[in-house]
Image 1 (cartoon, rainbow, N blue to C red):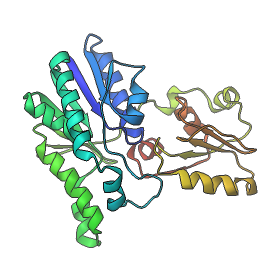
Image 2 (image 1 turned 120 degrees about the vertical axis):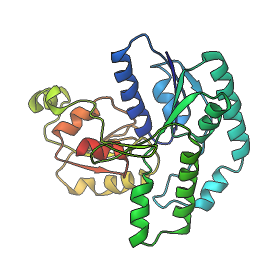
Image 3 (image 1 turned 90 degrees about the vertical axis):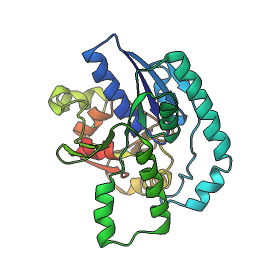
Image 4 (image 1 turned 180 degrees about the horizontal axis):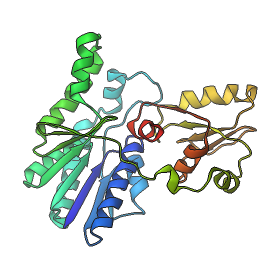
Length: 281
């Protein structure tokens, strides 16, 4: 069997969970052929792990916490060109690789390629329309958020296969939606003892972690922490930004030992991504 994974390059959460799924699949059947198509952070993550094709995707104005539809439009003024370019590249890849199934996380152009060739496919994404609808009944939702969620829902509607939606709760199936509880990559008892981890990582005290998820969204958070860190007798370790170091702040662009740091930390500051919150839970 041949599986094609098409992964968004916005942040690293998508890449990490897809890598976990791929590893589990290969444990079940090592003869399955894997190919990945991705852009930006996802392409950098996968290119040395599996055969990977570079595609092109939306660019987000990630420097600020507030989502701006206007800035997003400006950043993607050539969206049609990007979309067509990715469509043609994926179509060529499908003709050459001939996948049996396509796993899409979360690139709408891949849905159209899958439908073009009538290939079985499913999508994996964090947007839960059932939770959003309940929230909307009791809370006011801005115009930009409505446009964003309509984009997500429209993509879901295009998908002919299953829609996999991560949740913090138990498994549930609602029509073609499959609400799946968190995937545990590694259980805490599978890691070394805390004292051994502390010694190996050369830490004298349990740190406070700051997880940015591989995007630029939290850069102002990093700046704020860096400015006030000197006033605290704590060790801050930041994941997801360029490497730098002060007296009590260390940062990593990416570190595969994150779960070890998570086990021995005393607290964590993170964005709203599903993966890190699941691992904390």
